[in-house]
Image (cartoon, rainbow, N blue to C red):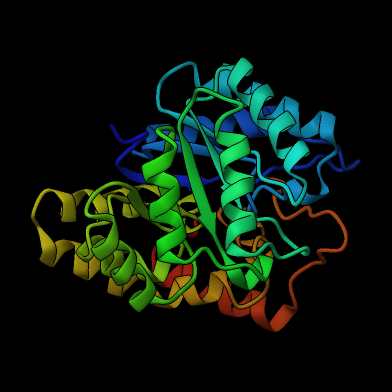
Length: 296
């Protein structure tokens, strides 16, 4: 059974003015997402700046999200690492904290081979009992999960149940769907490819766009899954320019700027080496938010 179907938000991690995790605002953001139809909360992913969280902050963000969500929707914890031992530590903590599932990015920088990926994910899967979504984003990690590898893992490890596909390669996703024959749930990892991946049998998205447009992102997926392809297509095409603006600089710089533009105080605060958005790009982003009616 799928961890979730629909639109999950890859939620940002807000910071205070003195660079601490702003748990009060994080709770408000989780509430806002659930109130506007979001189907799952994905905490401590790329968009959540997991790479600059301390180990203690990473653990507490996961625990906080589980406590605050209180079973209203599933909470999926980002627990990937380029160290298998650290990924296991994070994953076992998330399981103890009550997370409903895990999101495990491929090892970054050391760029494992396909056999290395199989060993890495197998070791993590056998250390926990909760469901796992693999996360394939080679533009970030320099490491691509081939379709054959994903299928082998899903067939050999019962708790590897899904994959977030952010390779951008629709042909690769099509091959994965063909080989898998339903053995692994496919989620879009790119907001501009939600509908194409749904059309190949995907069941949802893990979305950056949902941070600022949760209702629209939810409706895009829900309408398709309900058989209303025309509405889904319209929503996908309507949001294309905004998706482009949200990725005109490295994620999550634009989406955190967008959150502040739509009214979240100090939401654009980042941790180095991420830096504030260039003014010209910020103007473009503001224009696209205005076109979508998202500015107050």
